[in-house]
Length: 182
Image (tube, rainbow, N blue to C red):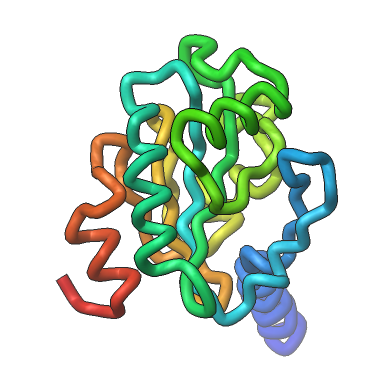
C-alpha cells in the first residue's frame, strides 16, 4: 500500500509543478490590426505588459510609456499595450479608433494589441495567467485599474507588477529594466 501512496503523491506533485510551467511565451494574442502575435517572438526580452484606456485619468501615461520604449526598447525590452474597457467604460472605441487615438495624440510606436478584457468572466487567457498564481506560479495580482504594468523577464516568467499610479519611469520599473536591485 505504501508504494502506491508514494506513487500517487509523486504524481500529484508532478501535476502541480507542470501546471505552473506555462510561460508568457505560450500565448498568442491579436495585434490591434487583427494579426496573430505569438509572444514567443519576444524570447530573451523583458516585456512590460500594460492594460490601457483612452478616456482615463492615467491616459497621459501613454506619453511616458512611449518615452520609456524609445529609451530602452529594442533587443532587450519591449512594451505591449492591451486596450481594455473594464473600468467605467474608459476604452469605448474600436481597435481602429484606439490605434488612431494612440498614434495621433501620443505617437505610440510600441506594439498595441487588440482590445481585450482584463478581468471578470470574459478575462483574456493572458490576463488570467498574469493575475493568477495558480496559472503563473508566482503571485496573484488582480488588475485594479487602467495602466497596471506587469513585468515579464527574459525567460517569459512574471516577476512583478506596478500599480496604475506608478509612472512608467518609476524607480521600480527603470531598475527592473536595467537589472538593478531596488
